Amino acid sequence: MEMPETELTATKRPVWNAGRTVGAKRALKPKQIWEIRFYLNQRRRLRDRALFDLAIDSKLRGCDLVQMKIGDIVSGGQIRTRAIVMQQKTGRPVQFELLPDARASLLAWLERRGGTVDDYVFPSRVDHNGHLSTRQYARLVDEWVTGVGLMPSEYGTHSLRRTKASIIYRATGNLRAVQILLGHSKIENTVRYLGIDVEDALALAENTEI
Image (tube, rainbow, N blue to C red; front, side, top):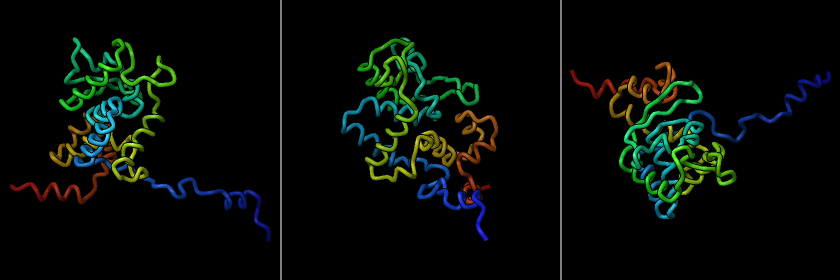
């Protein structure tokens, strides 16, 4: 008996994730963060170092990160210690801190970049009135992780968003704080995003003496 044409087509169609690593991208470890910083410093890539540091501290999605304007992070000629951004996906504001390393790299980049408070922090190299694209941001992340010997299939832009949140959670166990920092509307989303499982819960419990 002949196979129907629709079934024959389905059997020939390649699986969408064939050969790909699927699932959540890994967060970076502190050692890997410093390796990437050293890699970028050695190559004097001021823009990339500032972009990397801002991504780690802000914990923003790529679409929000690339659309940040100079006025979002600069006040009175100084880099803000705290900033606030309206999230494109949720329409909700989220605050974040900028620590000394990030402030220093952003200041170095903006002194070279120039511009006004209405300009994008990271302009497009194709259209200087536009911003760096999320696709180019993803390509840069691939380049950074490859440069320090990591597998690009295991890391991506969400790795940078998850990194500091994961470190904070493992250090404190304060899921509510991480939810606020990531701008999630539901704590269940934060649990899924961090990949928290029974082992994580037990490890926190074992470190809590009464």
